[in-house]
Image (tube, rainbow, N blue to C red; front, side, top):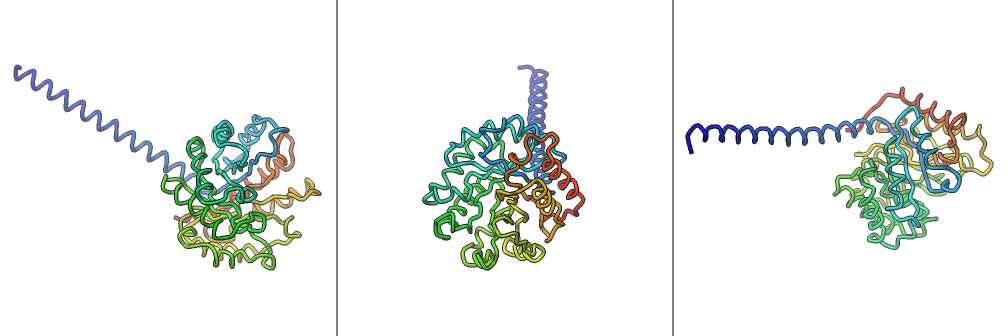
Length: 317
């Protein structure tokens, strides 16, 4: 081969190698940048609403999607899955909602926790969901109201083992996780005492979000002193962001006025602690807010969300 031809071939090889390195580097940088941007955006504040399975016979999915799309803030939609429905059957709902919102998946609600007899059975539910729903989920609720032993019907040790198994596996996949506790009047159950006795540090220090579920209707209208509770809650979960994982006006005699009053109280609550990031995740959001045109509760929650946008954002790095 002539020397001139060798030089040309060597030059082309160098050019191709440089182009390949540039292309691979660009892909890696883009992927990293997009993930970081999404993380920062979601970390700012959780504008939460809940979508469960109780509306399928009365409301079209398109109506739910339209209502979410028209919200003034990009919400985080907590989708509660039912044990009777296989994970693949949720793919259409999750994918459609994820086009207009962030998604927090709740593969097992506390009302279904007792159905899963051990940690392997429980973990399989999460693994099945992960295998088909992963592209549409930003946050995983690895345990819902885990101190609700009265209705779960299992011992605290087993419940915690199940939540720990789901959390450990999901974090090994690089997923972000949330754990929700149920707040009751202290004379009924002391949430802090329960956590002190049952919640290992290996779990409390390894979730990204620690949330509190609270319903005034279940507690005779009792309103806890949240400015005292959330700082103490943060001390249990020092590496997590905190907020409300559920709230709502679920009483049978609930009115439009009572729903507006209650939703305003929670969505516009000024941060009661350093790492508070909102949430709320109004229960019965579909039933209360869809159809959304001219719906006073829908418009009220949107208004409260806009008001909370003015709160200072203190991010737990």
